Length: 379
Image (cartoon, rainbow, N blue to C red; front, side, top):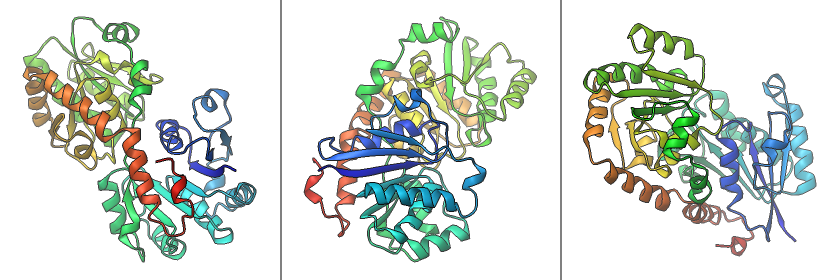
């Protein structure tokens, strides 16, 4: 009889379908039945069909209903757990973990893992207290998506063995992603980008911590030395109008191209000569793995989890420093980019593969004394 596994997420917004699939691939289908549940988000066949899991459930709670104590969500998940008797529960983000911590009070969960995808998630004193109260059992692990997040959590958690706070990196299925990438020419054509320009690319939400403001200022300096360059910013967010006004004020409206939101934006990464991640805060930066797979040279800020992802396979620069970023862009354009591309591809296929993730995950899971199926991992 197959054992039941739950992957419980806050919502199915990017990148959490990919994250759910990453964790689903840990489990041998012949031995495990995986259910993915989302707190928020309307049921949709399009999203459901993107999953590898056997079952996908959309609870479709409103944002208002999961504020405060989340009683209804706790009751709902307690009923699910009584029915399914989940052997392993993996929660992504804090609210799903909060709910399942309360469920574990009323019904045993053999293994409960909470994965945090942002910094300072557990900084709030109420959260510290709740975790100190409910997470004392040895069968509960906390994980950060980078060592930076792990160390941040270890600092914030009360009354808990620090060794139970681990790192579980985001991974990428190169064999799945690579065939979906558009060729350089096709990506440029679909985005209506000039074929002959040198394209500097950025992909992400237009919000303050992604710091496209610094990127645009740096590009203004680069443009004086390399007039053939264009900056392409893919994404949308509350700073879109502000950033467009900034480009206009700098006389760059014809040279900074805002594409808006592009579904499955990673498919277009080959269009770029350089990819630039200008974030001032970044727990991990999954787009970096996609860019490494696309074989595009990376420039990124030396902040939080980013250096862990890139290693020596790209250019690192101080955050919020337009002068240093401009200098690094000019340096990268003159460099032997093929060398960085090869290093990055080797790194993503060796250090961030599903096979490596499976090995690391089961090493941690099997360290839990209450886990009664050590030999059922398929590893």
